Length: 115
Image (cartoon, rainbow, N blue to C red):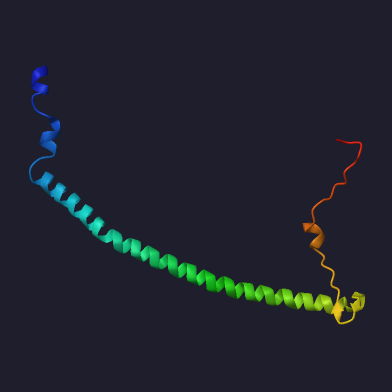
């Protein structure tokens, strides 16, 4: 009884004959098709990425130009409102930068008694 169970594989009856050949042919054809289409998919991805980079570069340049124009307009309006406070020496105007103090480093004095 036990010997009879191991005499024939149960997979042999399920996958055999024309169904096995059809499955193998279908899987091989899908693999070949995917290998054939892979360069075209990669080429399409590279073209799409290049278009995205170019679009973002032009878009960001346009947005940066708008931002710089708005900053220049705001600085011009602030400069016009602050005109009486500026000091003129000869032909140069001294302009105080408000955010320059944020970027200054801290200076520590050396004390003689500390080592």
